[in-house]
Figure 1 (cartoon, rainbow over the protein chains, first blue to last red):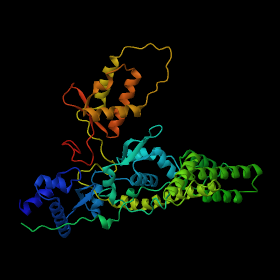
Figure 2: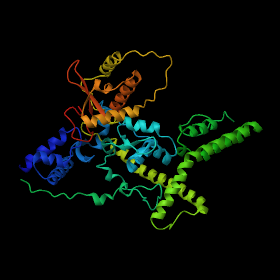
Figure 3: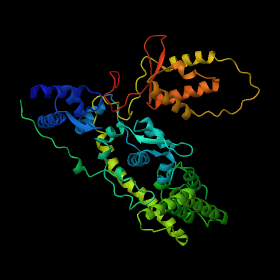
Figure 4: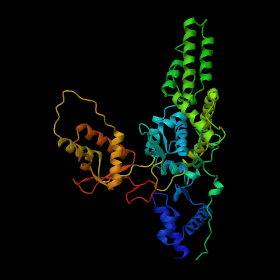
Length: 200
Length: 272
């Protein structure tokens, strides 16, 4: 497949997909290496930027998705597409705790926050940011909560590894410490290598 | 003093009301400054016309004490959990070879302090992480994703293809009509858990892939209360986007299916 053809097809797929679409998925469809897809997307992004287009391609929730640019938000808000309300402080704190400690029970969240979280959990579930992911093997089998792909989209994260790194590990937080795997790696260690293919 | 409003943003009421609200968890104890609230009331008391009476001062002290107690209760780990936290903390130190044995009985107070400090440290660390998430929330609020649900609406529930709530209620009515009437002289409390019923439905979905609506209520002796519980569990699963219902034709079988993964490739009806 020629580069121009692949490039147009990838652009079309990203445009048409209602969900973030991964390089692997597009690569399988086109029969090309996912790294080639990454490189094509990178090329498209540069072109969009160079031409000052109203669209951009963002990498969220493990895939690529078309999005508008923030500078046009006011215009879009005048269309009847609804506006996104900011999360309350309590909701942000709770969703952060779920994101870093998931799966986590309501009681564990309440222990950390020191207040009940029923209402906040309900709000977060209504917004599709968290969901029950199972039950803890403990007396009463309490429900465990985790984040959803919508959480990643909401905050523009590519994956949970993309969460802002936080200070703290088992040594500094004995007894209540985070699992080491829950502490995200620095962003620099997650960069993918993208190699531009020769243009066909 | 009860008439003096607590000068706390986002709260309307007296200092006593505030203390009760904090105790109930209606007001986030960590979002208010007990010092500021009490000081504001004290100044009102001090600047009020004439000397405050003994009753007034007494009520002020009681309300201030209640607020401090409520805030402390909200901040400190519950007693049982503090104990277990101490044990966990001690256990981890031992496993790292630093403790070298059982915790010292005489060091209980120190363990308690350490557990409390760890608890507060974790909360502080999360609060710092929240700052970054708040920035991202702000930044991404002005970016509209292609074909995403309307901002603020969260992920739309997977479509219930061709099935509305009224269809489900009609189907439920037919199920209930098929259950023989029960003569009760009293209503014993049923030990029914919606969550257990949700688990049951999800387990069956995992095993079978799809379930016919009427199958949800078959297979064993089932009471009207159980039917209602199962139905509510199904509605809850739909609300939580963990299951979808589908009806391929008018008056056809209603099928229960697992919800497609929101982040996955999704079916042709997803996001439409």
